[in-house]
Image (cartoon, rainbow over all chains, first blue to last red; front, side):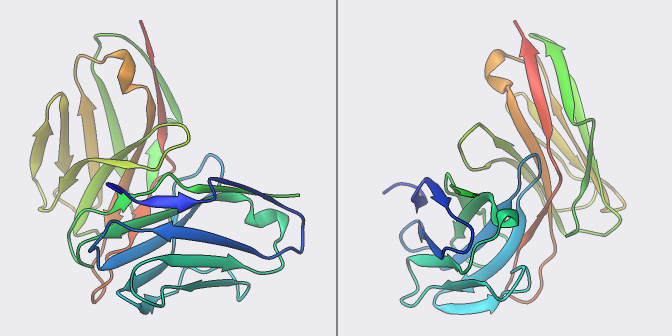
Length: 114
Length: 113
């Protein structure tokens, strides 16, 4: 596709369930970022991949959050034992390199934990 | 987490008016960016600024990178209804190969026809 795609677009989970959110970056983009956007807030950095290597996971809020990008393309953000405070929009962005190039954002996955 | 300061939270203007938005930080950034987000979509880059003091235009948009590297402003001239949306500033500090962005809380712009 022409842009970054994310699936599902909406996810409702019961507290304690595990969820997996998928990101398909723009083809050929080396860098991939995950951000969390709470209601009424700006996006906050979660983690960064360069190809398959996770170079920065300093923004992951707890060890319940795990991200992977095994083949350097598609990435999955997994949240185990979801809590209500995990409710947010999860945005994925990709760019050609990890430096100054533009980050292109996907539409996000809106997660609601009940 | 750290966020940049944007205020007010909402702005209401008349179609055709100019509007200016400010963004400040306690930290220095190497790059300042302005994004617009429409409901249900991800942020879209409007303007990127790479040097302190830089003034850049993109159509009706003009943005400046503050001399101190701790602030930036965005100006929209002759507003139109499609300018409605949430405007975020973002700063970037290169850490090795990582160029993660730090965002402000955003300003919701409403344009009255």
